[in-house]
Image (cartoon, rainbow, N blue to C red; front, top):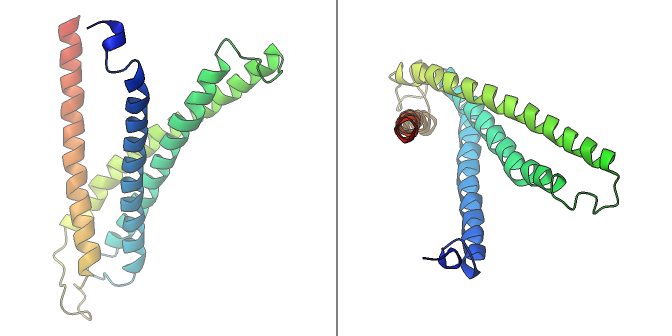
Length: 191
């Protein structure tokens, strides 16, 4: 297959790029909706889970933090990185800017990217710690879903939503660790 016949060149490259953009947009929408639902469920159940008052708090914090991470990653991938790539292109002074102004804009963009990367790292670590803490709250209680005046009562929807989200979180974390280990093994085999 010649270079012009490859799927990423010619008329298909636009389709592949468009397909990736739609995939990213759909994925973002699904995760943003999930995090919004987490926050909503936590807010709705904040006073109706005496069995473990931290279950609704877990949902609120996890949903808020994950949504902020999504937004930061969206800003980095769709705004900052294209901005930095454009500022380093050969047509840098297409806006009539002097070279020093172009360098200054690139420096500000790079600084902003560094700050967001640091936030992303700290938020990701906190999110993992919060997953463990949340599992202690959620898995550590056996709530009563029937009797609202019981001290062991917890709203069924909020509790089960937290239970499922935490379980999926652990599955995702495990798969991520396996993928990272697999990538390390493949990289060491190539060297």
